[in-house]
Length: 160
Image (cartoon, rainbow, N blue to C red; front, side, top):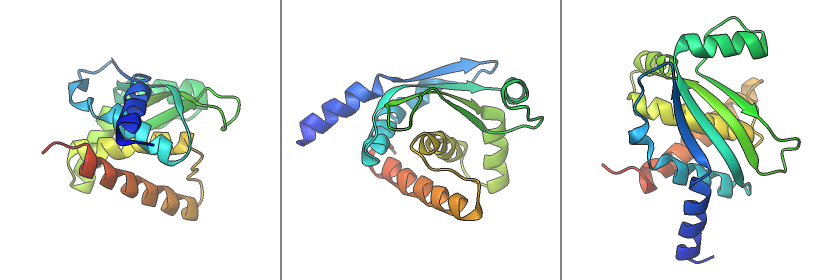
């Protein structure tokens, strides 16, 4: 595939990754390069994206979703709803991310908010690509994939 064809493909795929804000004043304007990056990540794993809606919200908003849909009574940074019947189908999903939790995690890890946000965003996509994180080995694998794709982002998409 030529570079122009690949860029066209990424551009087309990027249109199906959308960002929304609920119950927070998070500014999504800084995320303009994210859809192209996610399209590339999905292509690297031989998968396509039909639609992914990333909804950035508060801790309390995501806690209510966690309680209502998963019967969990605790804060989390991300909840991913996969709307496909089979993993072989193009990705169709809603991904909820607590910007409060991401900010707290970034502070705890002493890293920039944006870096932690990218990790959480790609973490959700990796689940949709078939990477679980239940066991220690699975957590190690998904963390390695996160690192790999974060490196890709900062090399190709991040404008310093």
